Amino acid sequence: MQIAKDTVVQFHYTLFDADGQVETSRDHEPVLYLHGQPGLLEGLVEAMEGHKAGDSFTVELPVDKAYGPVRPDATQKVQVKHLQGARKWKPGMLAIVQTEQGPRQVTVVKVGLSQAVVDTNHPLAGRDLKFDVEILSVRAATEEELAHGHAHGEGGHQH
Image (cartoon, rainbow, N blue to C red):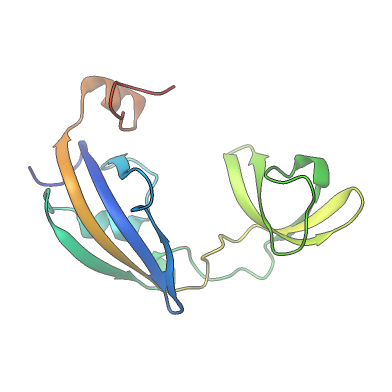
């Protein structure tokens, strides 16, 4: 079966930027996603279309197809109590902040007693990226997965 809308894809990836390897899924469970739903970079989704289980390929995403350019105006002040992920904060640390659109990863720029300045750019913004991808399986999505808008792992949904 080929990857197309409403198929569930299980894959491993290794992500690189110009400086080398950034992260890999091979140290964890493979990624599972419902093709055609949001959640992956659009350029990666486009590159997966038509592939099947057993395929391995590389896709290079320029900045505009990856996380976009760095926006210099993307800093804001937040209450330190709203930063999630550590007890003590230092510049350069990654934190999670709950927003109206859900959790968002931010980078701490400066920390005061009660407020912190955070950078809301994605940590990989401004970088060209390369993904080495291995497709492990492709199957038709179940009615339940289509209704929920995401793939379910072994044993059904986890929510």
